[in-house]
Length: 202
Image (cartoon, rainbow, N blue to C red; front, side):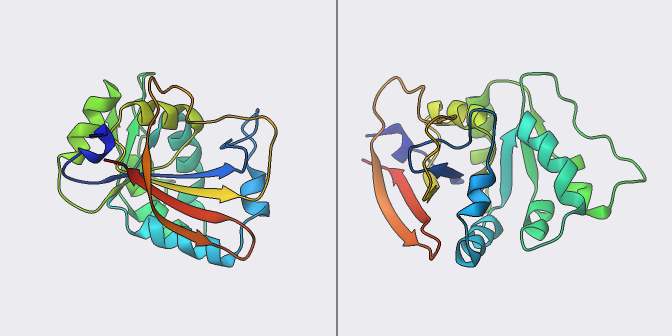
């Protein structure tokens, strides 16, 4: 049995946009192509998926970037991004965001994020052992590559955009063995993007 299908407890979902040639960002982290090839339907789908999360997990770099942006942002993504509890995984001794009088109430979930600075797989297992709505992983290529190699992801929500980058950062590159997945859903959007959902195959 594939290790991805053997997980029990709280579900871990990886949500990621990627180009048609398999990159999640450009060589220097560029991701403007995600917005250029999106549309209102794909945005609404992504908002619904985020709303289903009971916790959002990410790496330190993404956490610092998003924590500086979302508390004062507007739009349909702002509410779920600010309201859903967070966990951040780091190997750099990150101590979190200190509270201050200048921060709006919407920053609370970022200030109160759980910090895991030990083994990634152990931290994920701890979160998955709890009860509640799914854990959704967001973030950059490095964190996602590490997360994939743990074998603890239950579901992959990949939004494939109608663009080729030619070069960039992939996420399915550090696997010791092939990983077989089961297709469970495909949704096409007017702008040409596809939301493809996979689960671990038996």
